[in-house]
Amino acid sequence: MLHDRMSTSLKHLGINSTNYKVLKLLPLVYVAWANGTIDDAEQGRILELAHRNFDIGPQGEEILNGWLSERPTVDYFREGLHDIVFLAHAPDEWEFNVEELQGLLIYAEAIARASAEAVGAEFSVTPDEERALREIAAELGVDDGESWAALLAELTVPRAAQA
Image 1: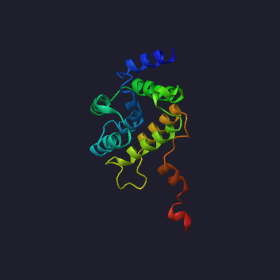
Image 2: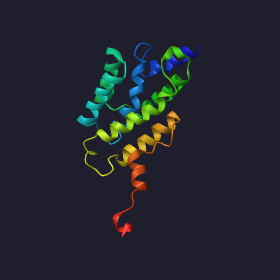
Image 3: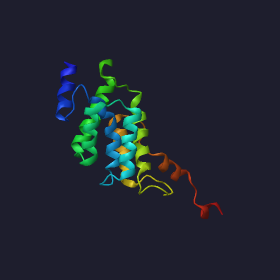
Image 4: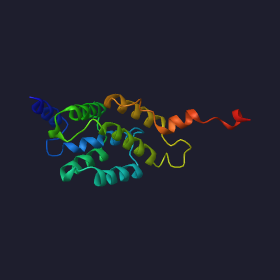
């Protein structure tokens, strides 16, 4: 019953039981699209992480390339994030773990930091990316989704205040 329900939801997203691991990359893609476009640095970083850290296979890579070339809808992102949580709490056959959810948020922030717009900025995560990180954290049920950049900004005392 649970397997059928999950298969139906995945099918709605264009994913099946052989390429579902690509869902782990959806939070990264969501942050990359937060500013309305994906730049080369973000795309390169996502592909690098996909090849190095995620076993998505050729079918999963095809889905990922589709996400990188055309922005999925907000509803698609939300359904996919919901499915990630569902898979993480499902029986072991799905190869998703609750412990991975925090790591997915960390990877998503790394993508935000990879953007060309962010390079060299004092706090490199843009407000749109911060919003996306908070939404991802809420959907995945992990910390408050505040990036390290935002935390550092809160802790940094302006030089004028130090004098």
